[in-house]
Length: 366
Image (tube, rainbow, N blue to C red):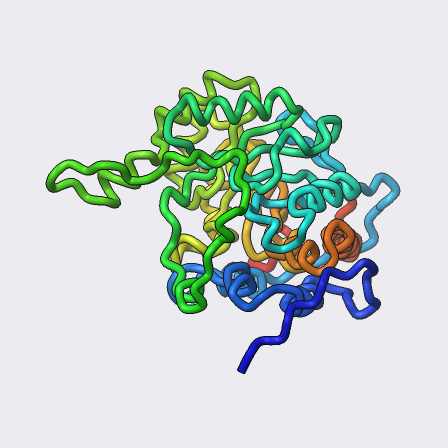
């Protein structure tokens, strides 16, 4: 039985789209089946994909009342820069799979909503094409075949007003994704990736060398590469994909400016510790005001509150904004951000917290 043709993107927002879950259901109607499975799927049994969302359900809130809200706001300061709210857009590549305007649409919506956007190395859009004057944008780096190639991308980001460099360290190799294999998902052959190095193939191996360990992993960054990058850029360097407290402590020692606690949306290694649990372990071993962001599983404004209460400086959302992009381009991304922002603000008010600094573990039943 043939699948129905996907619907074209919407140009207005219908009244029934009220939550991220609504957008998820709607987005499924706008993509071919293989691309939908690529977006939704994860590694192996996809237990981490599920756990990333379930991690918030067991966290119980304990509100306080009768507090003063006259100075209420959602502002935060990271790396010496003020941000209007703590809801950032995670780096996601290949966005032309989801909407013809790809990262152009996402960046436009993010700028409109003053949400910090992290542009992926695997972007279909050149970083130079996004608004240079928008201060709310970072560049995410997948390590290239050499230090020099990696630094060239960072220097391009510096020139175009990106405010930080996010180095993803948890995906030196693609995860084993059963669902993608079963639907024969492949990226379109003519899809542009202006910032991805073309020479990351295994190359010639010597006799007895392993295609993974001496092949693919040869190009993976190591701690000394991170130290070299920090020395060669004036931008804050943030590591994304940290789950182990020992790595967090080492990052601080090496001069890394901040961390993004993430298991790559469950797409790389299945059954990892959930980011919300890892966040608490990492927060316990880094300096008090050290920036630690959480990425993974955010679907409601109350999830954002819980993450901040348990130690997150800010959060990143991934699939939710892609549901918006798929459904209605920039308009959909902006609406998803508006939904999450309003849910978070209302949660803050109902919890008795007027500012982010007031949100702490005392509001969690532990």
